[in-house]
Length: 160
Image 1 (cartoon, rainbow, N blue to C red):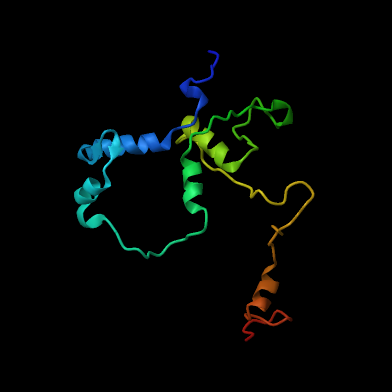
Image 2 (image 1 turned 90 degrees about the vertical axis):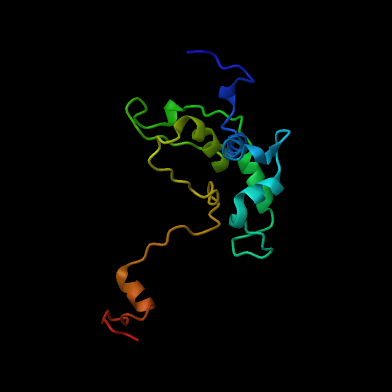
């Protein structure tokens, strides 16, 4: 096993922006000038597919642009195994990874693309003993039917 040194490609997650630019350059080389995208040329090449309306439907919030920039920044983090905190380390096909959701996903993307069946992300709240938000929403069918007017409190259907 080779030692990984600082600055080698293995120390960084995938550079999504560079990959996107390379793909775009392959499709539309004439839209590039001096290594940068000429959006006027790109708009011309895309024709009517470009939507230039000012108002659009969508989910927007303050900081969305910055969040997208952060998501596209390559990570230099490293995942380290903890066999002593794991169950059946030598035979399991499941891993628990603890860390910042975005950083971990960026690190996993390069080595595990197409190899992961499921990622369960536990929200970052409710850490330790400080349970700020309830996260157990289990209810029984009878109570649900009563709350939605489909039965009365004596469990007779057709209530409401």
